[in-house]
Image 1 (cartoon, rainbow over the protein chains, first blue to last red):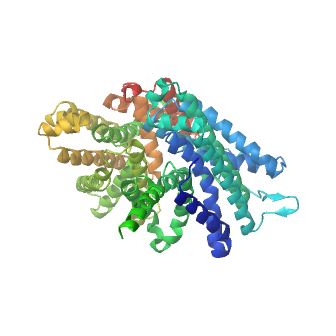
Image 2: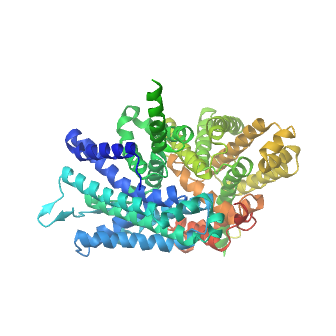
Image 3: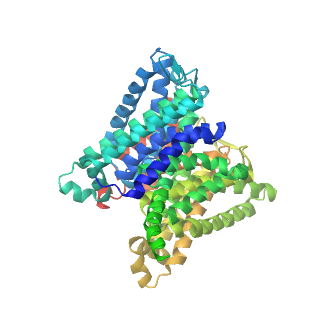
Length: 318
Length: 291
């Protein structure tokens, strides 16, 4: 495969920055960054379902929640080891995604958007009210951290590298999926469902698989969140969270894995940068999203791409 | 039986409000192609403006209603200029995210203006109740049902029996052709958004004497209206009415007979069932025809 040189340079710079981040930024910013990386895993999943396959998913937070609650319950109630609970929770999220997706993906466009909003709200109602299982609004506390042998990823610095390792792994898997036959099928389904169906792409199966994969990514994100914060409650997976995840993807660039990660980081830090706005933050946030939609329809990744394309010619002229 | 009748009337009242919200949502979608995810926040703004107007005018109901409608018309124009114009013609996804984001902004602005405490309002027909045949029905519930019936009649006449309605439908079918036929498209779009915001505002004003109005309730209201639109079928006035009433009844009867904590989930189950078994709803377009 031919990878353009600027891309390699960009990836290298990102890698060095990512590895050096814990010593470069304040402990508080490090916490925000860890949460950003955890969100980024769910956003990379959304990139598969929405960015590549075109499925509007306004309910990704529900799957993050399913992963988080499954892992939290398995470790606190049934005494599972975290490393056993993690794959179990990811599988539960994926199966839930498949079971929910099978009927729901018969819908398209805004119908699908509405159904996924309904899914997230239903999840919220269930987690708030099924108190015996989920602890209701009080949430679940005392969720153990993650460790290997006698080593515990208890410090923020060590957990940061753990989250970074997971994110890198799942981003590489997503990139491999994108480059595969199935990846091309996803893009084809997004671009023209009828035409690619006529060419023999199994449209429904492609959609369902992409949705299931996205759910698994969401589940993994939830597991890491639960074991990082040691406490989860329904508010962590509500509609606002679901919208935030999609906004991260849109801001980053909807069909780009690096864009998804960049979007997750930018949107996670946005509240910190806009702190001077106080309670008016969300007003600016909403308007900002519309401005990004209008001015940068392909997000940060698209802006970087066109900048990269423009730069060499600009240098030549100068 | 008396109890059932009482629940039925309450369900009908709340269902009529959902029908008005669904109508606002559908008019936006039909005439401008915008799936307006900020509908619920517009309803809340209407309710809060109505409650404030009532307080400032010392409970002069006709004047305060006039104020509320005027403010909502301005909100509609602002929405037209700042949301619709930049998003017009963009893909569905962009519009969905854009209106969701604007909904967040509107909710935040309402919170800054009115604060987080829930507001209550009074009904123009007072807080009396009607007692017949062993049932106790709030006067306001009957008022809501009456107002909604008149309002929906007016919207129907406007859209299907007036030249303006013809222009609306021409615009919905083909913007360019409508423009070539001499229809003032921009003005018509602005008028649509005034109508959309006005209907949402009326729904809010009707709702505020029944429920405490909280700035965060927009999304749950919008979802009920979306459910109503899906059950009734997109783009159909009778559909919006039937859908709204079904959602209202499902909510009130479900809360009483099945579970009050899961009443909202019941509404979504109903919606999902319709999406799967009859995706075009009771009266709506066939989904697959729009590629």
